[in-house]
Length: 435
Image 1: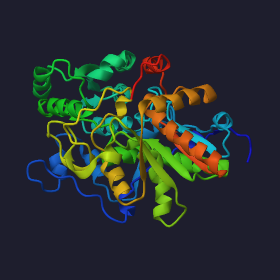
Image 2 (image 1 turned 120 degrees about the horizontal axis):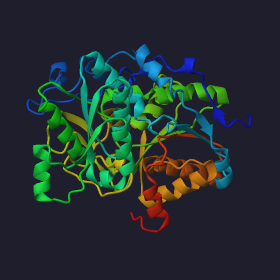
Image 3 (image 1 turned 180 degrees about the vertical axis):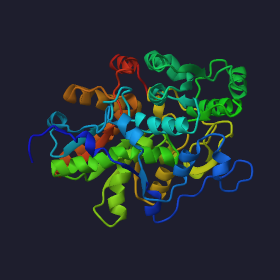
Image 4 (image 1 turned 180 degrees about the horizontal axis):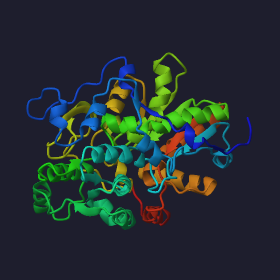
């Protein structure tokens, strides 16, 4: 072992394919169902929302899906992202564990979301679409899609969950700087938003509700707009596998391999993006890893939700997907990790948990920020509130190694920085943050 801190790949090592886990699963993921007929959803059913190439990826059966050259050209502006050995954190924790983090905050929007925003915008642009509509919780996905649309000279409309709209004005400003229009959800622009505001004018909103507003806006566009989704569905996790595929190559540079892979989980794309390429080796009979999906105790989808068919949005406009869910009408508390305030979970991640291939852990908000502060003071990077969940679990595993004396290798996804989330840290440091 050397004292190397950063394991870097040149631009020509960016993966040229995304990894599709579906062909490798011992049992198939249950299909999406049409909300009206309850029959499996077809490509034609999804055509009002997505372009043909995105739909094809949602149903893809091949293990490797080619990344278009035009997408790789944009990826090159920040990919490959670094794999970092957190040596200072190891010393702070006095642990024999080797801690690594895959840092996705190095791109212009500061989170992993740009990995799927770019291909989604690209496929829509190639299909002649000039306007995309979406929702966002914390604003990471909204800012990523706003930039992707700016790259491709497209319009972008974002429904931002009201509590985050109010908590995170600089995320909103970033989206607007990239050219997007941003509306607080629930809003007066849609029938579903107006109905919620009539019941509760101060409604904090939820990702499920913002999805309903975005889907309604697309339906009202008469085909002029399409919908883009930042997590949950298969094609989004597919795009995010560039994270884990790069990490595999970087662990070869480090002459190491993780025993434990950790990611925060709201809809599942960040966790899946890192974990799926490592799970691939285990599914093929190779080395096994413990994969831990970490969620907030305020929205414990994987740990306390039921595994059942449910709507992806709060008003029942989307297809039914089999997933761990707290119920599509569930409105989570207004925690700062807005990107994790979703009632459901990726069908793929949910299925993996049912198969016993991944673990789930719920952690409280204050403990996450404690870990985030420890990490910041050791490594110099302030994690996004969502990312502190992965940090918390990594710290806990490293402390367990200190107790047991085991020198395990741990990698977690630092999915984004918290530079737009400093009010959350002010609240934590001032003792105003509660569980």
